[in-house]
Amino acid sequence: MSNENTQTNPSTSENSESNQPDYIAMQYRVVRIEDGWRTRKERIGAAWKGDKNSICFRPSGKQIIEGDVYLYPVETDNQQ
Image (tube, rainbow, N blue to C red):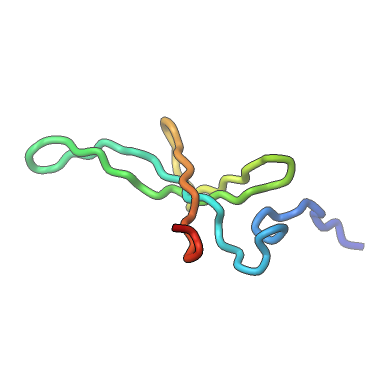
C-alpha cells in the first residue's frame, strides 16, 4: 500500500494547463559596484494562487532570504 501525499499541488490545481506561476518573487539587494553602491532587483522564486485566498511561494534553490519579498503578477499576452 502506498502512503502518497494527497495535498493539492498549487501549480496543478487551477493553473494545470500552463503550470506557469501567477507571481514572480523578487527581492531588492544592495550590491557594491566600482563607483559605489547600487540596488538590484533579483528573482528569488515564484508563487501560485492556492485555495482559500492563499499563495504558495517556492524559492529557487536553497538560499537564505533576508528582508522583504515582493510578489509581482505575471503578465500574460491578454493583459495590457
